Every structure is written in C-alpha cells, then in structure tokens.
Image 1 (cartoon, one colour):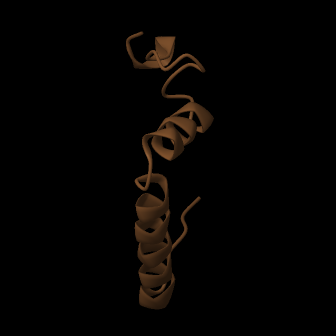
Image 2 (cartoon, helix red, strand yellow; image 1 turned 180 degrees about the horizontal axis):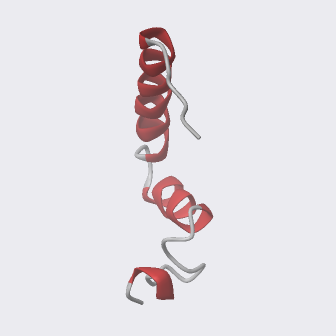
Amino acid sequence: MSYTQSDQEIQTMVKNMKEWGKKIATTPENAQKALYEMGIVTKSGKLSKNYGG
C-alpha cells in the first residue's frame, strides 16, 4: 500500500507539528505529559522499557 501527499498536505502537517512542538515546550509539565502520552516515559518520568528504561 502506498500513500502520497500533496505539497499542501505536507506543508499543513509540518505547520501542525511545529505548533504542537511549541505547545509542549512551554513548560516541563507539558513536555513530560506529551512524552508520557507517547509512551516514551512512565508516569513517574523514567524511560519506558521500549526506550531502554
């Protein structure tokens, strides 16, 4: 299966990702919450097993 995106779709996606990055970088708590929601860290802030914790 293959999926191609138009230049407009890519630009929109990049814009959204940059906005999300700015949002989560506003406070350490926001960054920690985002990493937890992605499964990178545990609720206590340690690396999850999938990432070497």
